[in-house]
Image 1: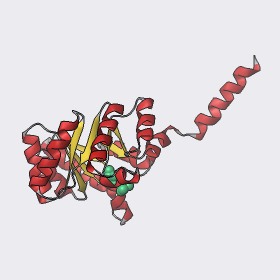
Image 2 (image 1 turned 60 degrees about the vertical axis):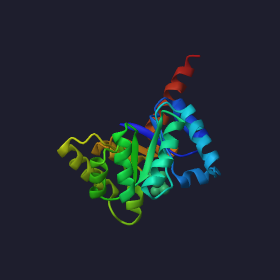
Image 3 (image 1 turned 180 degrees about the horizontal axis):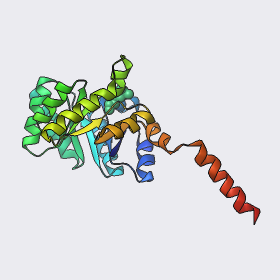
Image 4 (image 1 turned 45 degrees about the horizontal axis):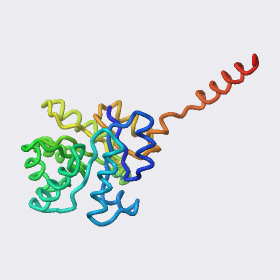
Amino acid sequence: MKFFIDTANLEQIKDAQDMGILDGVTTNPSLMAKEGITGTDNIMKHYVAICNIVEGDVSAEVISTDFEGMVREGEALAELHEQIVIKLPMVKDGIKACKYFSDRGIRTNVTLVFSPGQALLAAKAGATYVSPFIGRLDDISTDGLNLIAEIRHIYDNYAFDTQILAASVRHTMHVIDCAKLGADVMTGPLSSITGLLRHPLTDSGLEKFLADYNKGN
Ligand code: G3P
Protein backbone atom coordinates (compact mmCIF):
# COMPACT_ATOMS: atom_id res chain seq x y z
CA MET A 1 0.00 0.00 0.00
CA LYS A 2 1.36 3.43 -0.93
CA PHE A 3 1.17 6.27 1.59
CA PHE A 4 0.57 9.74 0.17
CA ILE A 5 0.25 12.86 2.31
CA ASP A 6 -2.65 15.18 1.54
CA THR A 7 -1.20 18.63 2.15
CA ALA A 8 0.68 21.51 0.60
CA ASN A 9 2.55 22.16 3.88
CA LEU A 10 6.25 21.70 3.15
CA GLU A 11 7.21 21.02 6.79
CA GLN A 12 4.68 18.20 7.07
CA ILE A 13 5.80 16.76 3.73
CA LYS A 14 9.44 16.83 4.96
CA ASP A 15 8.42 15.21 8.23
CA ALA A 16 6.70 12.29 6.46
CA GLN A 17 9.51 12.00 3.90
CA ASP A 18 12.11 11.86 6.70
CA MET A 19 10.30 8.85 8.21
CA GLY A 20 11.10 7.00 4.99
CA ILE A 21 7.53 5.83 4.41
CA LEU A 22 6.21 8.48 2.04
CA ASP A 23 5.30 7.49 -1.52
CA GLY A 24 3.81 10.73 -2.79
CA VAL A 25 1.77 13.89 -2.20
CA THR A 26 -1.72 14.99 -3.17
CA THR A 27 -2.79 18.61 -3.22
CA ASN A 28 -5.85 20.54 -4.26
CA PRO A 29 -6.72 24.25 -4.58
CA SER A 30 -8.12 24.31 -1.02
CA LEU A 31 -4.93 22.83 0.46
CA MET A 32 -2.83 25.40 -1.46
CA ALA A 33 -5.01 28.26 -0.21
CA LYS A 34 -4.71 26.92 3.36
CA GLU A 35 -0.93 27.43 3.13
CA GLY A 36 -1.41 30.94 1.68
CA ILE A 37 -0.21 29.87 -1.78
CA THR A 38 -2.20 31.85 -4.33
CA GLY A 39 -1.69 32.94 -7.95
CA THR A 40 -0.63 30.64 -10.78
CA ASP A 41 3.11 31.44 -10.60
CA ASN A 42 3.34 30.82 -6.85
CA ILE A 43 1.31 27.64 -7.13
CA MET A 44 3.54 26.31 -9.95
CA LYS A 45 6.68 27.10 -7.90
CA HIS A 46 5.16 25.37 -4.90
CA TYR A 47 4.58 22.18 -6.91
CA VAL A 48 8.26 22.15 -7.83
CA ALA A 49 9.23 22.70 -4.17
CA ILE A 50 7.09 19.70 -3.21
CA CYS A 51 8.65 17.55 -5.96
CA ASN A 52 12.10 18.46 -4.63
CA ILE A 53 11.22 17.05 -1.20
CA VAL A 54 9.37 13.85 -2.03
CA GLU A 55 10.55 11.07 -4.34
CA GLY A 56 7.13 9.87 -5.54
CA ASP A 57 4.11 11.15 -7.46
CA VAL A 58 2.76 14.65 -6.77
CA SER A 59 -0.82 15.33 -7.84
CA ALA A 60 -1.38 18.84 -9.23
CA GLU A 61 -4.99 19.82 -9.89
CA VAL A 62 -6.29 21.74 -12.90
CA ILE A 63 -8.87 24.44 -12.23
CA SER A 64 -10.38 24.56 -15.72
CA THR A 65 -13.69 22.79 -16.22
CA ASP A 66 -13.57 22.58 -20.02
CA PHE A 67 -11.53 20.09 -22.09
CA GLU A 68 -9.30 22.64 -23.85
CA GLY A 69 -8.50 24.44 -20.61
CA MET A 70 -7.72 21.17 -18.81
CA VAL A 71 -5.39 20.08 -21.61
CA ARG A 72 -3.62 23.45 -21.65
CA GLU A 73 -3.20 23.52 -17.86
CA GLY A 74 -2.34 19.84 -17.60
CA GLU A 75 0.38 20.07 -20.24
CA ALA A 76 1.94 23.05 -18.43
CA LEU A 77 1.83 21.17 -15.12
CA ALA A 78 3.33 18.02 -16.65
CA GLU A 79 6.20 20.15 -18.00
CA LEU A 80 7.05 21.34 -14.48
CA HIS A 81 8.50 18.08 -13.19
CA GLU A 82 8.51 14.39 -14.09
CA GLN A 83 6.85 13.54 -10.74
CA ILE A 84 3.72 15.56 -11.51
CA VAL A 85 0.44 13.68 -11.97
CA ILE A 86 -2.43 15.67 -13.51
CA LYS A 87 -5.44 15.78 -11.22
CA LEU A 88 -8.72 16.12 -13.12
CA PRO A 89 -12.26 16.55 -11.79
CA MET A 90 -14.81 13.80 -12.35
CA VAL A 91 -16.88 15.62 -14.99
CA LYS A 92 -17.45 14.79 -18.66
CA ASP A 93 -14.59 16.98 -19.91
CA GLY A 94 -12.37 15.65 -17.11
CA ILE A 95 -12.88 12.11 -18.41
CA LYS A 96 -12.19 13.28 -21.96
CA ALA A 97 -8.99 15.00 -20.77
CA CYS A 98 -8.03 11.87 -18.82
CA LYS A 99 -8.22 9.82 -22.03
CA TYR A 100 -6.23 12.50 -23.89
CA PHE A 101 -3.43 12.41 -21.30
CA SER A 102 -3.38 8.63 -20.84
CA ASP A 103 -3.10 8.17 -24.64
CA ARG A 104 0.03 10.35 -24.46
CA GLY A 105 1.60 8.55 -21.48
CA ILE A 106 0.89 11.40 -19.02
CA ARG A 107 -0.23 10.18 -15.61
CA THR A 108 -3.59 11.28 -14.20
CA ASN A 109 -5.60 11.26 -10.99
CA VAL A 110 -9.39 11.57 -11.38
CA THR A 111 -10.68 13.32 -8.29
CA LEU A 112 -14.00 14.05 -6.57
CA VAL A 113 -15.20 10.47 -7.07
CA PHE A 114 -18.20 9.46 -4.99
CA SER A 115 -19.71 6.45 -6.81
CA PRO A 116 -18.64 3.13 -8.36
CA GLY A 117 -19.94 4.28 -11.77
CA GLN A 118 -17.67 7.31 -11.70
CA ALA A 119 -14.72 5.08 -10.81
CA LEU A 120 -15.59 2.75 -13.70
CA LEU A 121 -15.53 5.68 -16.14
CA ALA A 122 -12.15 6.87 -14.80
CA ALA A 123 -10.67 3.41 -15.33
CA LYS A 124 -12.14 3.21 -18.85
CA ALA A 125 -10.44 6.54 -19.63
CA GLY A 126 -7.10 5.09 -18.52
CA ALA A 127 -6.67 7.02 -15.25
CA THR A 128 -3.49 6.20 -13.33
CA TYR A 129 -5.28 6.90 -10.04
CA VAL A 130 -8.92 7.28 -9.03
CA SER A 131 -9.66 9.26 -5.87
CA PRO A 132 -12.81 8.23 -3.99
CA PHE A 133 -13.41 10.70 -1.11
CA ILE A 134 -14.29 8.48 1.83
CA GLY A 135 -14.36 11.11 4.60
CA ARG A 136 -16.77 13.34 2.73
CA LEU A 137 -19.14 10.39 2.20
CA ASP A 138 -18.95 9.56 5.91
CA ASP A 139 -19.78 13.24 6.58
CA ILE A 140 -23.17 12.76 4.91
CA SER A 141 -23.93 9.45 6.64
CA THR A 142 -22.90 7.30 3.67
CA ASP A 143 -20.34 4.52 4.11
CA GLY A 144 -17.15 5.77 2.43
CA LEU A 145 -15.32 2.49 3.00
CA ASN A 146 -18.07 0.60 1.18
CA LEU A 147 -17.23 2.63 -1.92
CA ILE A 148 -13.61 1.45 -1.70
CA ALA A 149 -14.84 -2.17 -1.50
CA GLU A 150 -17.17 -1.71 -4.50
CA ILE A 151 -14.46 -0.14 -6.66
CA ARG A 152 -11.95 -2.86 -5.67
CA HIS A 153 -14.50 -5.50 -6.71
CA ILE A 154 -15.21 -3.86 -10.08
CA TYR A 155 -11.55 -3.20 -10.91
CA ASP A 156 -10.57 -6.77 -9.99
CA ASN A 157 -13.36 -8.17 -12.21
CA TYR A 158 -11.73 -6.62 -15.25
CA ALA A 159 -8.10 -6.31 -14.13
CA PHE A 160 -8.12 -2.54 -14.58
CA ASP A 161 -4.68 -1.01 -13.93
CA THR A 162 -6.11 2.16 -12.37
CA GLN A 163 -4.93 2.44 -8.78
CA ILE A 164 -7.51 3.12 -6.07
CA LEU A 165 -6.29 6.17 -4.15
CA ALA A 166 -8.44 6.40 -1.03
CA ALA A 167 -8.77 10.16 -0.47
CA SER A 168 -10.38 12.36 2.15
CA VAL A 169 -8.88 9.97 4.70
CA ARG A 170 -9.27 11.61 8.08
CA HIS A 171 -7.81 9.25 10.71
CA THR A 172 -5.88 6.06 11.41
CA MET A 173 -8.87 3.71 11.24
CA HIS A 174 -9.58 4.90 7.70
CA VAL A 175 -5.99 3.94 6.82
CA ILE A 176 -6.26 0.50 8.40
CA ASP A 177 -9.68 -0.23 6.89
CA CYS A 178 -8.49 0.89 3.44
CA ALA A 179 -5.51 -1.46 3.78
CA LYS A 180 -7.86 -4.35 4.66
CA LEU A 181 -10.03 -3.58 1.65
CA GLY A 182 -7.09 -3.49 -0.74
CA ALA A 183 -6.90 0.21 -1.63
CA ASP A 184 -3.66 0.68 -3.57
CA VAL A 185 -2.93 4.07 -2.03
CA MET A 186 -4.23 6.21 0.78
CA THR A 187 -3.84 9.96 1.12
CA GLY A 188 -4.46 11.71 4.40
CA PRO A 189 -3.14 14.31 6.82
CA LEU A 190 0.18 13.73 8.62
CA SER A 191 -1.78 12.81 11.77
CA SER A 192 -3.38 9.82 9.99
CA ILE A 193 0.14 8.48 9.38
CA THR A 194 1.89 9.35 12.66
CA GLY A 195 -1.17 8.14 14.58
CA LEU A 196 -0.34 4.62 13.38
CA LEU A 197 2.78 4.72 15.58
CA ARG A 198 0.90 4.96 18.82
CA HIS A 199 0.09 2.20 21.29
CA PRO A 200 0.07 2.56 25.10
CA LEU A 201 1.68 -0.89 25.50
CA THR A 202 4.57 0.25 23.29
CA ASP A 203 5.07 3.30 25.51
CA SER A 204 4.83 1.42 28.83
CA GLY A 205 6.93 -1.48 27.49
CA LEU A 206 9.70 0.85 26.36
CA GLU A 207 9.59 2.72 29.66
CA LYS A 208 10.04 -0.58 31.55
CA PHE A 209 12.90 -1.77 29.30
CA LEU A 210 14.76 1.50 29.83
CA ALA A 211 14.12 1.49 33.59
CA ASP A 212 15.40 -2.11 33.89
CA TYR A 213 18.48 -1.30 31.81
CA ASN A 214 19.26 1.69 34.02
CA LYS A 215 19.12 -0.47 37.21
CA GLY A 216 22.46 -1.99 36.31
CA ASN A 217 24.09 1.38 35.40
O1 G3P B 1 -7.62 14.19 -1.22
C1 G3P B 1 -8.87 14.75 -1.07
C2 G3P B 1 -8.91 15.59 0.12
O2 G3P B 1 -8.10 16.71 -0.02
C3 G3P B 1 -10.23 15.95 0.64
O3 G3P B 1 -10.13 15.80 1.98
O4 G3P B 1 -10.70 16.15 4.32
O5 G3P B 1 -11.18 17.94 2.61
O6 G3P B 1 -12.51 15.85 2.67
P1 G3P B 1 -11.19 16.47 2.94
